[in-house]
Length: 121
Length: 110
Figure 1 (cartoon, each protein chain N blue to C red):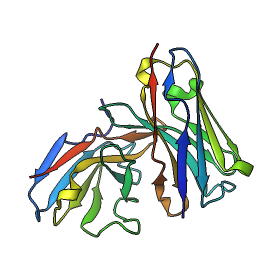
Figure 2: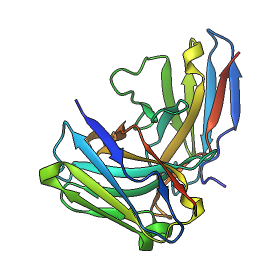
Figure 3: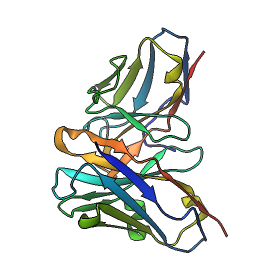
Figure 4: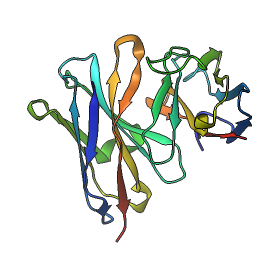
């Protein structure tokens, strides 16, 4: 059974850096067939994709946010870490990590519960 | 302004069939698979449809997806009260190199 859980600070000040951790189980992030994605949903808004980290190390970022995002993995801990720099109140959102399956183009199939982040001074 | 266009709301009575549309362009829906998610308040999105019309295991066959040209649709038949939720479509956009989403449709079961 695949599970994912996000963790990180609930409150961050503007201009600070946000670090979120996705701890997963039930799969191995070691091949190009599997990835972990990060998405977010601001209050009252739609979903927004942020990044994809494939098991072979390939990374993809949402172009408008590319300069602010970094994603990495710790295979031994089954964790994926997302960092976002220069936080702004517009970054207030619930952040989700998901399992992403390239096989059969299943996509974002299993989601974590999400973690709420508020950016405020 | 979302890249994919969905109606902001839809409604139906129990047992009815409702459809939710998702309109895009040649650089996204026209050339890529469409996915649909269901989102209940304070819960994670749930994948309902992948590859335009495929259901993950566990998703009732009341939910079906279709695609034609640069538009896609999600149909829900035999509407139930627990279907009341927000529904989002998404796909990859080749021009933007980005996963793009619709603005979401709030489904109300009357």
